[in-house]
Length: 260
Length: 225
Image (cartoon, rainbow over all chains, first blue to last red; front, top):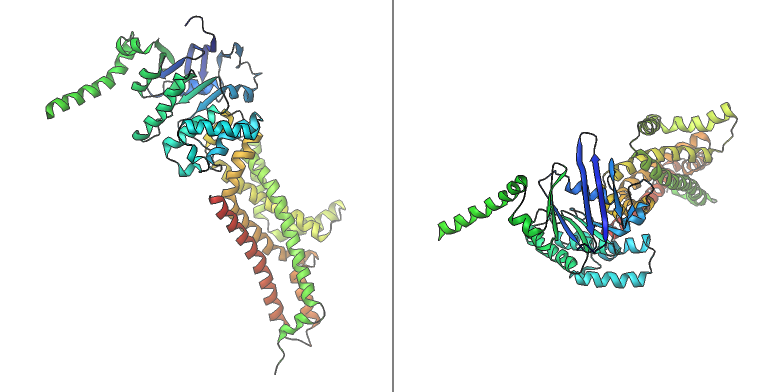
């Protein structure tokens, strides 16, 4: 692990909307090919952290470095940086005025000025990979939530980003559709993509993560590999957080044994 | 057997003159509408900027134009500019200026409404792809805005076409004025020309507005897919 190069580095990041800090003194290094899952209670600043990384939110202190270059010094060409940082949102915002294919081609053609034939071939290949090639000429409103989210992932992948940010991408989905999206993300993780994932799906977090980062109240409370995090959490706060989930499954077990 | 007043249409080149009058009406309306759409989109974009001074200025402009009757605006531009600043504009130019000022205000407000109805995430998704603001507007926001705007804008254009009948009062000879001239010239030979001429004018207006509305419905239908 130690030999791998650091792709993204966050140093003492401070974010404030004007009524108290949302993120305080956040430091995090993401290595190439690493999958980091951010968990924590609602409102702990996980999503805000992702939004700071690709410049959707200005930061009030600290710095963020991509490939060793600072991107928060005010001189950044965000259009260029954002090509290297793919982001998928909770509300899978495909552009409703375009077909699936046009949605995923917009960035490559207009931002990266790539050749249409070549970009289209790649788009079709990626759509096939997420099982949606037959939907390439459909409009977003003809797709299910899970399908839209998979298209949104392809749209981000088309830019060939160095790192992918996932902001609670399954939170708005019906339960049956969560799996199809998580499977795509698992496959991406296995193929070596660098990913930063915010999710409430703890089972998935455990399966996909190289490291789990637990945020609470704008601070990083704990940072560990998934096994240690889930089985021997160091802090009381994480213990309590995990317990809320454990309690639910224990009560289910009890019901099962009662009914038998 | 009484002669029908409609025959006045076929005397000399009366019908042709009416059509030419209609053309003036259409020309003023279409030029004003086209300019209004362009400036209105810009104004609408400016109106979404959350800056107090910009908000106040655009609000004043909008309210001023809305409160003033179009006729007063026409007189203000046609007579006012000449008498105060010595700028001598033709009736048609004055009309285009006034209708553009009016259309820009109305259109701007429609565009503003359509723009703020587009979810914030649409902008963010565009930004996250690395699109420049101008590209976000061009490929994502404006196409969606236009779709919401078309029915409203068509309504505005047809209102504009109908309001052009006011330009008679600043000496522009458009379809209504031509009609009046024909009626006057045939007052003694064809006394019931009035009804027929105005009926024809009604149909001319109807056809023009209907064509525009039909075109808009066709567009809406095509954009549904």
